Image (cartoon, rainbow, N blue to C red; front, side, top):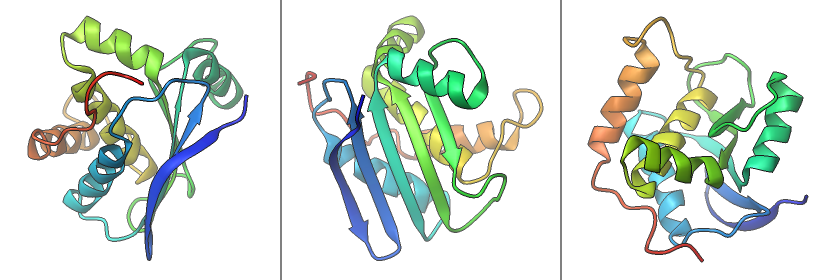
Length: 162
């Protein structure tokens, strides 16, 4: 399955690109790009090169098998360009399963917009060099929650899926 580029932004040393891997895309992709940029700015980063693949469970399960040796679909995978390096520039790839996103939203009782924001922030922090740390009090998860609160009014999806 090929990835279809669908949008993005390039501003000097800052770029966010989005591709589709066999899925129908939600409306609001420009807001998705904007949300990523605001998240990175709010977290204190000045430069980034991020690509996001929106895909289905089959595609993310194949990626999960290939790179993590896990035999299942997951919600988000992150691939930092510089493994383990924390700080500027933030560079890497994120894959998000829209199938799992929908199930998560229903299971957690949140909107798909809120779940997408959670998955994006989580993936962005991973490619920025953060890991989960120990227990629920890890620095990454604390920063994730702070960013989600700071950006809670941001909207990504503009309505129904295409």
